[in-house]
Image (tube, rainbow, N blue to C red; front, side):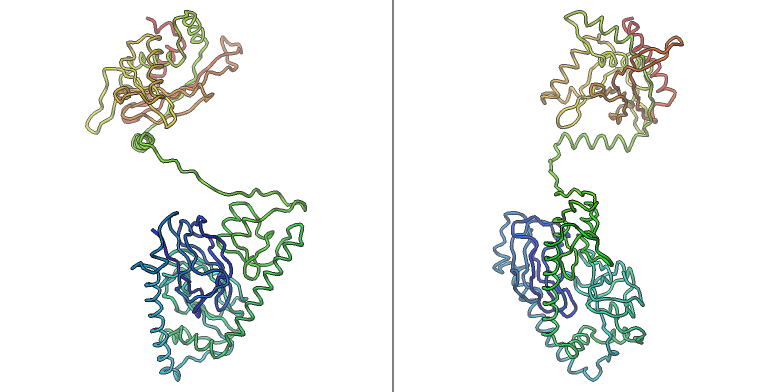
Length: 551
């Protein structure tokens, strides 16, 4: 659903704002935290962040245009969404009706404030000369209160105009709040972690040593915003202040542009670095030293676009920093992938697994397979030999061929071995029924048939049900050793690695041997460590002496 963004009140006395620069255009994708625009207030030019994600569908106030606070600034929503009602003001929830209501309320509030000011002018708080009271700003169009997340200045510190005073949490984000005044931070009105309504006294700045005791208490008794606005209008001429700030902004941007065009290499900025929160995050992600970046924002402040457009110096000894665009491609999870994730998650977090690993001598197995495959009508793999050996070992160690239930451990009298098969969408486990009764060639033929069905999505659910033990082989991918997650409700799964040549000791002599590492993952609720170890000992006997599997 589209979100209407209104002109925010970025300072405590702001009544209208001017869009200095739009940093995105209609049709652009917007993420929460992106800088939408630079807005000139009655005090400074500030960056305005988006609190929503989507596509910028409409810009209500163009660059250089001025509008009242709460005027329609922009609309963000889904690409192609119909926002004609919001633009024309026909929406009952958003748009001009909302703005009209706000405007009427503002008029009423202003009239009310005017009357109150007249009535209480004799009781107006008199502030010492040069003292400025800073109130909790309204940093978003829906903000009613704020929380001070961090104070970056402490009482007694010197403050310059443009310094970041604090980080303030709004109802939508945590934002930096700049000082519009210079002086000494005389008093903090809202401590770190404390929340307060908009317009509550946030801090007091003035000449060092000024006695400001009692000011916060007095402001609590009266309308702080009204008194502050009255004091500002009495002591300062709005036109002169606005003209001075516009000139300062233009000179700063002009100087920054000239510096960028004239300097062939980056130079280190000295002193405090002024950068937006988003710019700091991007710089950290990209490994960019902020001291090497020239800021194009107010008073040389570094903004998002400065980081995105930053180019490291071609010379001068600075290391090259890659700059690119971060993006993701979303691939919808298929029902198969969801099922796999669910079952593996249930297995991993419900079964207390442990792992046993052994290294097998494969010299005799290699010789036996070579002899068997000499028959042109027979072709078996090492995996077929492992499956046969597992089936026969399970017959001798039935406890491994079991299932856990809260009421009892179920020991299967039949041996159905699941064979993990990788497909495009995940992992399927066809089941060889009564594998202990099959020959090598029967196992090989059945595995090829079921694996082919799995990869072409023609395998039936019945052909993947009922396993009592599982074998997973990644040896063909060159994986030497790994562990697998138990395929529930089985109690164990065997992970088979690749056959590798390595130096081995035989009869007291070093020779070239062929070994294969296998790891048995067991559910400790049904299979004790000694039981699992004995199963692997039997498996070793069959694999290292294949002739015993013919007996």
